[in-house]
Image (tube, rainbow, N blue to C red; front, side, top):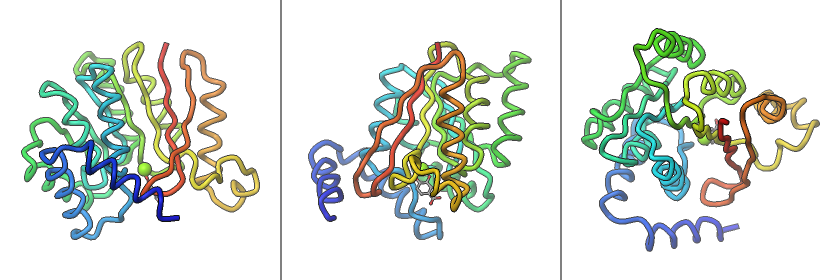
Length: 226
Ligand code: DHB
Ligand code: MG
């Protein structure tokens, strides 16, 4: 169906100013040239996330899953005071992200921590507990899908009260609603564990929104801490 892509193009043409557009499109293009997979958020999705962070007046943003730094660069646009901490397992992706953010003039606003998400988050939790790091206002989880519930729980621990936590790719072409798909695909199984796990967590209110667009049929989970 060509319509979702055509609509994204139309929205970008009229709603995305050239200054944002050129910086972000350069990062997207340079990431593909460096051999990274084309799985970053679309521009309208990334701008939507940045606007949510801006609505929260977020000054400290946590991201799990940097890829080439595309969404981190968008989050860096939240405000001149906003600092993004983003975690990436793959050393090549992290190096490409560093280069992209340097070229975009955003490296001062983005801290890239290379390592296993759960391990790096444990380190961040210890820094927060020791008072060496401020809690985050906003978190975006967009890494390997198998560890989503662990990432979500870690994000709960390192964010302040009333923080927002968003998780990407919770719909996966509608597969999330299928117990049969979960048997075939571990990522679907673990995404269902995320949804059902959050449903049972105290201290957080959540829902999920299905999306279409140039990135096909997927969706975001959004959670607000009490
Ligand atoms: C994949 C991962 C993503 O975060 C995404 O937004 C789309 C696809 C993937 O691993 O295939
Ligand atoms: Mg994603």
